[in-house]
Length: 113
Length: 148
Ligand SMILES: Nc1ncnc2c1ncn2[C@@H]1O[C@H](COP(=O)(O)OP(=O)(O)OP(=O)(O)O)[C@@H](O)[C@H]1O
Ligand SMILES: [Mg+2]
Image (cartoon, rainbow over the protein chains, first blue to last red):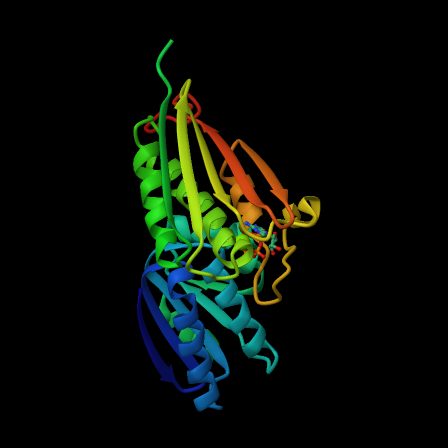
């Protein structure tokens, strides 16, 4: 898995690539938590999954955990670019009912304000 | 009658082996006429079972061993993932979607295994271990035709 984190105004933009399973979830969780701890201005989370070829419940658990954290302070989570396999498990998990799917980062940034 | 085609692998209870297990199962399954989409789903199902053995069955003890086996009979794939770990107290509860004994987890593993197989059988004894058996038939006629 590759991860790129960028903060744009009130939003943390996370670009993920590769396979997200149990082998990488600790690293992913810790990196996201650290950024949220270090930057108290972050309100919303934009997760770009365009380059993600595989995800299962371990990865979805990390996303839900961060959703819980940002939504406590009224923040939102946007999902960008989920491919077919990824989208199927996101849908089955119900996460797409509580997060907003967006066709592009730019639009997500716009909506995040 | 065609001979049964089988495989069996044992590997350490390590997070890195989740992807090893799903790739191995996917490669074995590819001997049937599954679609790429079917294989993707089977890979998720296997990963979920192996992940459960690592984190729940063995509580992340890398010295423990997980067994993955598969069989092809009559165009049907039978997959089994087995650990000799803690076992499950209440299988009925464990199978409920959104049920998890770990507050950090979503309780989706069994739901995915159920969605992505034709049948799911969970055998478990507290203190002895857990065996998860999934079957999936390869139905060529069930795939929608393109271009009609
Ligand atoms: N191999 C196993 N050994 C012991 N307990 C297990 C095993 N597999 C599952 N369980 C128990 O069944 C529960 C439900 O499993 P399931 O995979 O559905 O959810 P989860 O693993 O808790 O969460 P998620 O799969 O979303 O990460 C687990 O929380 C655990 O208590
Ligand atoms: Mg699980």
